Length: 169
Image (cartoon, rainbow, N blue to C red):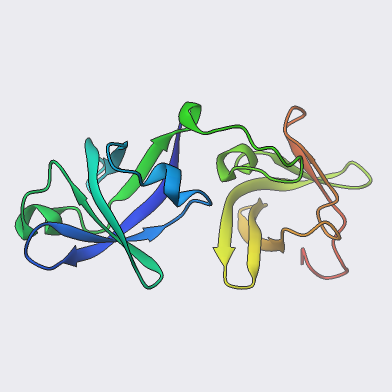
């Protein structure tokens, strides 16, 4: 299984450098020279890319790949998702820490056991993480905090919710 670790925002300069929005908590591991990521292009195709250089640029990283020699090739990667193999991810040491891919697809149930929906994705916002739930075909954003999500059961494939009144409406 692959997990999104970044998204190519745009080409930067004329030598094939790319501005990348980071979507991982461990960019130093995911974006290290020599690491290979899969680029899922906008047309749905994928291609492997080997990281050559990485440097910080504000909230983004500027990266070069061995397979991207110039701006023309870099432009073709605009909007591509950068994926890493989940088998290559180190295990989390904190029992309250989860990878996004571990949460996506879990059933969302209330403390009384009634099913609410499914976790579609984890949204990373400046205010914190949100669980985007599919509730009867509509998206509901739930703050991913212990007061509202008191239990995450990866093995049981569910998250337990104790939402304040009106949150799921």
